[in-house]
Image (cartoon, rainbow, N blue to C red):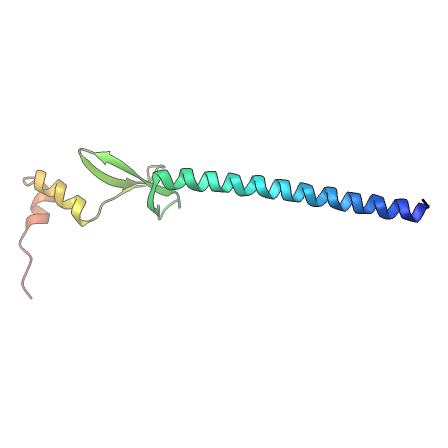
Length: 105
């Protein structure tokens, strides 16, 4: 076997080794991303904090499940969640605001 043959064989083996490494690390990265996405979707409720971009998480406060920024940048409630709180707190400012008659147009 001549020097050229040895160089070509070495180059071929190096290329195969490199391809195998690339494949191995690509599979590991894909699995890590899948696990991260799975864990994230288990706690995230489908929105991001407009301030920091973190996924909002569902938290129960006084029996009402609301969306909250894990970094403390705020809480988000929808109409139904506010209605539950307003019904319970009719004498508070929120209850009065929510149950105030709407002006007719």
